[in-house]
Length: 114
Image 1 (cartoon, rainbow, N blue to C red):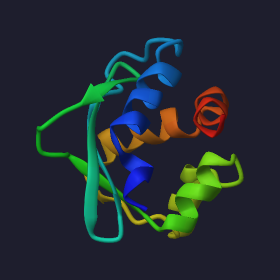
Image 2: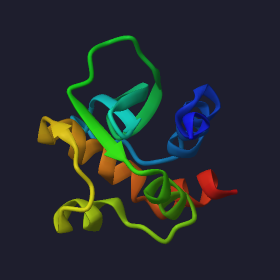
Image 3: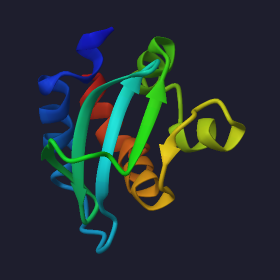
Image 4: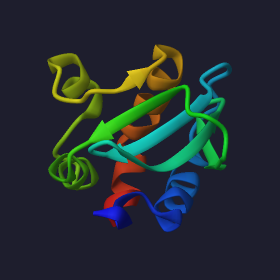
């Protein structure tokens, strides 16, 4: 499962989100993990993932392996999973909202699943 959030995945997110319209202020440092282990920390600036960072995440989104697969295949909407209590992020809501806007963008999901 560790390969779910490796450097290639972050690079794919950077590419997939590059064409998104700028969303001023939709920014933050987000950790992505499976279980209790954070596997990647990425920076979002104005609605786009700009790359990995060593900064402390303001929010960590904790997935199960099945959730990652369902999300990348387009079957799971992360915002809906969060609202149902099926996705358990820990931290601040501003960066979480920035991440969910990107992660639920149909074009981004399609690029990740390709």
